[in-house]
Length: 78
Length: 127
Image (cartoon, rainbow over all chains, first blue to last red; front, side, top):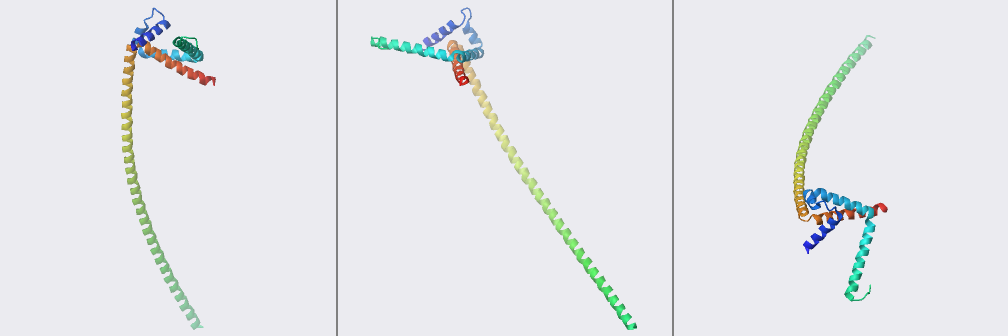
């Protein structure tokens, strides 16, 4: 399960970063700088679009949950 | 008439003697008073000197005690600082190891923390 989560995290970062950049090597070589940049990037994103992203995530989660419940019940209850 | 003059002269002589005796008595009394004054001044001076010495001794004791306490406090502060430095070094090593083993996760966690802080600051600035 932990290995799956690690792969998921790596895949997510793969999608965000350019394909020709070996980001794993960069992060392993400069861990502090990479983490600092990640914090700064997250901060900028949170400040600029934080509320929108949270609302979108909440909506997506609610939709997924509703469809799972419907699938479980075998009927479109929600 | 001659007798009167004689009486007058005798009276003058007696007055002169009385005045001389009074003058001597006053001088003696003045001398005694001066001596007593001098004794009192000497004893006061000695007392002040003793008190000053005692105050200096006490001040010296207090200063030594304060220096010792300061030394102990400085040593404790230095030990605390060294311990905190060691703990920080260990934490840094652990973080570096984790990042090397799980680069993707580490980056996402850092970005998530930054995102939350940005969200909090966004909320505060809009208030």
